Length: 479
Image 1 (cartoon, helix red, strand yellow):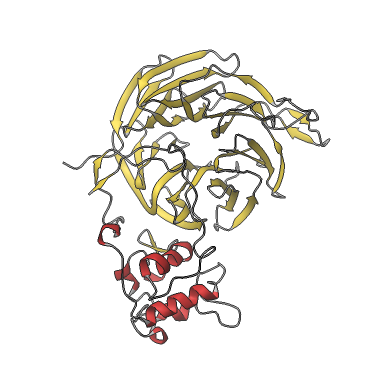
Image 2: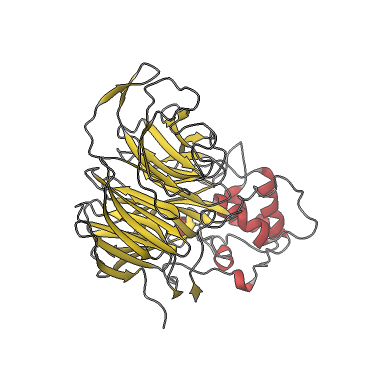
């Protein structure tokens, strides 16, 4: 059984650091090759996205030692201890004439990675996984909770029928009214940091990872509850997932200080931006999909041109001390007329606004495109500040019309939800002294907002009255 009150890596714990890629700084220690410390890492980074219980391509699963030794659809044993020449795995990953059969549609393993796997098999392919570290979670062996999971992410489906909720190793699909779970999407990542339905509601993008080992992007087919693909990215957890308006791209932030985007059909990386100097925690596309907005622990919000992958400008002020603390969450204001403005480069832009929040607790509204030349000390893109919330602002979301936004914060073991009127800043509703809040979501109809956080409960709030109308646990606890 799993006690699942785990902490959000890097967001709630001060001083966490991202892992250095294995093998970059140190020479491999002498002695036999370790499956748990060395070989498993290569499989996680390159193979398990297609060979896991949720997506066993070729009839082969690589997420646990026992299945590694079995045969896939070829009928040949994948790993024959002591005999790499008889092992189908070696045949599949061997580089011949500049190409390898596996990983499919990806670069071949590096020569030193291949040599490590081959040597491990030659040495007997021993399993040195510590008993306490053995992880057998799958759709046939789902997580069992002694304690409610800390909830980091929520999203309603565009048709308003489902509410996706983050769990441990999984996403829980609830009926939107809180009357029951209708699906459990169980993947590799221990921690789910962010999730988002595609614009058409047919797919769900999930990002997270296993800290210090790998980050993962999962894309699920919602109706069939099937994993369409999984992509391993970097050596640490991923954050802040968002879809482009046409559903063709998925953006996310990384603990290696980069902003990235992949093709939603193939998983191929289509954007890489390295202008941030700390973890990238939030992303959102402009309404026309031409630009990406990203927020970071480096106290900046940046604008990137999607087609060229070019960093355009800081949306926020660059004056030291103007912003206090990192920026964690961002959302694009919908429902606005497509007004054109002329940017400083002379080109016409669609006027877009975003709300942003972070460690100082103050929500701020910004226009994403600069229309005046930057001057020292200016914060010209800022439209307005809103009344600060107690503690750290962890989540902001607009309603469908863009007239309201919900904000959730945490401070000293408590949390607060607020609904702000975008135009005049008036606080329309407030829920105080609740659990620390890490996720908020508006129902598409706009009458209900959901929030959740540390205590593992989802609460539904009536937008008009500000009253909690429903409260339920993310998952049933073991008795």
